Length: 317
Length: 259
Image (cartoon, rainbow over all chains, first blue to last red):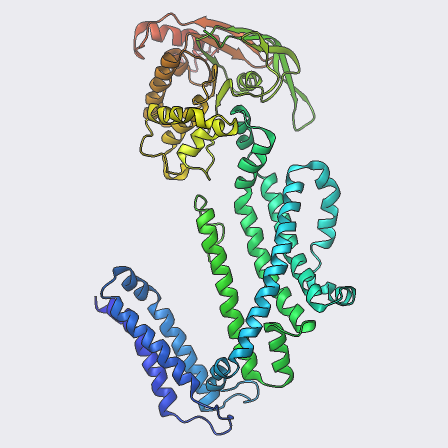
């Protein structure tokens, strides 16, 4: 019981410790001052959330278990932030240009908010368009290759030659071929998505147990029924893996494409801030990317659990 | 009554991994009366599964022909239900949807909705309609697979060792259930099995097959009343007779030591 409470309270204790360090020890004088103690604000907001959750955990058993399970982890996270805070902000043990104070990093989200939102929307739009184009083409190609030997014979060489080339290596060519760098970026993202989805879809279909089709045969199913009601559902776990690889691949392509071609988006933001030596903004951009990419992959897995509930653990997230 | 199968001079050979030709079936002739229960028994490699698949139309014969009620079998069809060794349910469909799969595939589901319910009840899976195959035991899955094969009212049910993967007790229960369905539906059933007891217990006729060359060694009529007792003298006589034909009775073997 005591251990359980300790685990549940560990986050709050760790956050109080972080706040004490942040408030009691003055920032190093070499660090450029932030407009406001944004990191302190951040700690207070997180603190309030966890105190509220702690209170809620007395009413809800599930919340209590969750807090008990994840509490030490979040406490560790807060401790890590405190260490970073001490090293960077308080004692400036590392070069201040590259290792800005946490106040400045968190301040970016407040001061640069309109621009950041604009970047998120722009990146999101680019990602969705590129992903949709690539996924539709990839899924279709995969199904055709998977079910038709003739198509497989003629299309497989293309897949094998073009697929493994990193999509971004097309940038010198496509940036000149397409009229806008935006179209070029869509092309590269679509390409990076197309390949894994094609391969995993066709693989999935080719590896469907023969008996599944035989069962359908003996039940009087026609060709189309066998493709859409047997082959594709049976291949879905593999198709999902393709979507997973495609998603991670699309992040790489998205950020790289934005860094080199586009005039908006998170990749562009990172590159631009770097060229102005504003490393606090670069860190903020990286944090933002981590949160967004995680969010998208979590969504993907939520979707998987819904659609592929019958199939347990291809990859865990 | 419908569901008569005529097998005429059916031969089938495969090419094995070394490039050699394997005679899986060698000019097999067999007549299966409508409404009877037949077992195909024999050691591995005697072609019993190949013969069953030829009847189903899953593998067509190289030469010879299979007729169902006088009509040539050209490929698989829903008039011949097939129960596989593994349940082979679609794991992405619920039990109810697995069982109704064939009806939907043929576009007759709307008229036959009641049948699905009836067969779910018949195989004792009421209350599990919305469960998924991975949530049920092997025996329940096998029952669902039987219901799936039966719900389209096939004239013939082909059973490829459908009980092989089950434990002894589930197996005996399932044997009785299959017999009950056979009686109720008055259909022809042809079952492949390794198990001599199972063959004697269930069949009107036991077709004994031997390998190299793959052929029918003998067809034995089991003239026992039903329900049968697994321990009766007559039962054991049939059992011994079949084992003798298969050379497993142990009477012709040299004793390894003398007292």
